Image 1 (tube, one colour):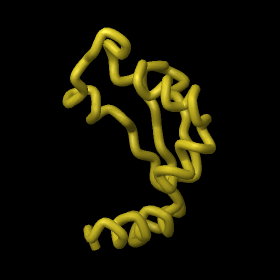
Image 2 (cartoon, helix red, strand yellow):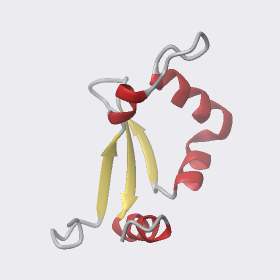
Image 3 (cartoon, helix red, strand yellow):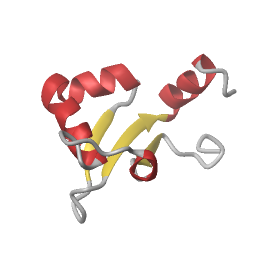
Image 4 (spheres, helix red, strand yellow):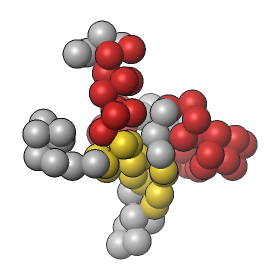
Amino acid sequence: MARLAGQRRVRIELYGPFRYFSPTDDFPRFTDALSAVIDAIGENGLCSALGCSAVSRSGEDDRLWYLVFDVEQLEKLCRDIGAL
């Protein structure tokens, strides 16, 4: 759909994991766990692992994170997991 709409990039909001995240003593919120990953491997490391081109925090709500994928990267990821 993104390609048909002429989009070059897709921004995915990491809101869904909030519903499914099971809190622990060390990570009471999903964002705590995500921040620990970013502290450990950096934003570039996270992007490399996920295949995204950028990761960023919302300017309005620092609890929200976004992954930015180039459409080509997202298509490749979908092909790799058999979703296309």
